[in-house]
Length: 131
Image (spheres, rainbow, N blue to C red):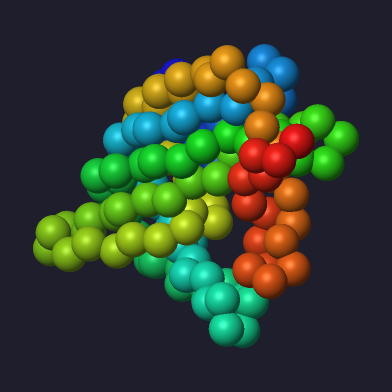
């Protein structure tokens, strides 16, 4: 898929996967993002620390997956590496970001229906292969 200026990256991918009833997939992409927010998860505190980046960034790598969660809905989980005009990189869990110029996203469906369920010890929804 191609995102246009102003498209919310995560929301656009999430809505497309819901519309396609895509339960499991791999996601990759490149492009640009404005005012992105990244996060880092601490297993100790079981909380995300977020950092909003001001300005426009190159999305040098967007990777993630789609897993089935509550009610059979797809959940898009993305990580990104972003570069500013000084070629300094930031990376982490993509919380949000708006496409600046364009984004080229590849979604590869998987022939599975694995679920992500909440793990109390880790504090996150993780792949559950026991079902």
